[in-house]
Length: 102
Image (tube, rainbow, N blue to C red; front, side):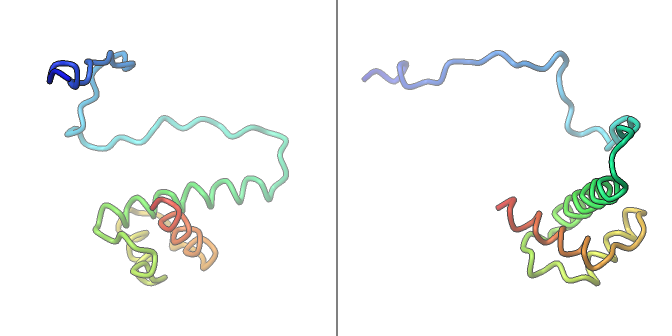
């Protein structure tokens, strides 16, 4: 088979504009949460968002394995990124997110 046949064909990007990865991080514009849900839904939703932010912060700081992310380390990451210290439940969620991302 000729080498030209093995070359992947260029694909067209679906992005409307080029994505620059070296720009500083900007949070996504916040939208109001849907009304009419039980209070427990909002608590769980916000806890998941916080756990995701903390998991990303830990991964960025070089903590890649869930067993490296003890509660103290997660809470220090929370202080670094400027969020309230997470509960034990949220720390457990952070480790679960890191575990399932592998």
